[in-house]
Image (tube, rainbow, N blue to C red; front, side):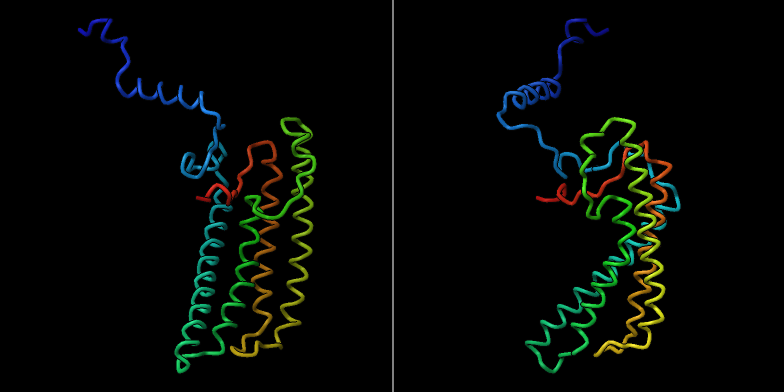
Length: 212
């Protein structure tokens, strides 16, 4: 049996935690969450549906591949400046086309996590109210309509630009609009899934949380 006196006394770990909490309360600096203190940015946010998780995985994978092509193209340009024999005129074009394709293909992923540019005019005023849910539904509907309009434009441009080729690699420019078609269609899907879940916490992509 452990005496009550010994059982009630806090251990060294608990005592240090209390002392640390007291020091923080007395600090003149406010509490700040960073990527290191709160590594899970979206704690408490319900998981996405399986179709959204699968779509996001494909978009991230393609985005990583295209980003790698950007780095390869740029670095090959640098090497070509120092070793002219290895210079390739298509290196810069590879990096440029990959950058445009990556911008398009990651559109849906960014839209699904509020990584796109938005104007939050009424968000703070309506936060915590039922009208805030209505605002989120309206925003999602607007994004769906806008994304579908861009899907149609991308579809038209695929055929219109297929006959034109890039100068160095001779890649049909219509290929870029295939990435645009997929990206904006994904944005419409991501926005559409936001409508029935407008009442729950929203998943966010906050790059500032990853700053050192």
